Length: 149
Image (cartoon, rainbow, N blue to C red; front, side, top):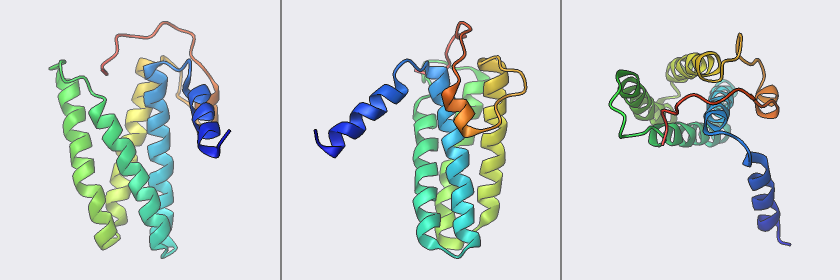
């Protein structure tokens, strides 16, 4: 087996059995991690680290944006569309001006969205504290109606 085949097998096994709601939570956690690392890149004057993790955060937020169900015309979905769109407008500017404020603001929004997701959608008391905990625990309660396609 090639390395690419091994990686694809690993990824398929890792995400297999996850609900769409759990996958969204993983995206939030990944965005938070990559925004933090991009900010570290700015603080360390390391443009490679900043750029690599900023790009990953943008890709994750893009995935969150495109996963919204366009058939639902709910006010909360419209809010998320606009919020994600604004993030996707502001984050690329960080590469040009090293503006950590845009990263801080995006981080705070994603953190709050993750908390709401954990408490309201996944019905978890107090939310999760660590990324590893998030991807290793599964919620056995029945999933609510999904807002995502």
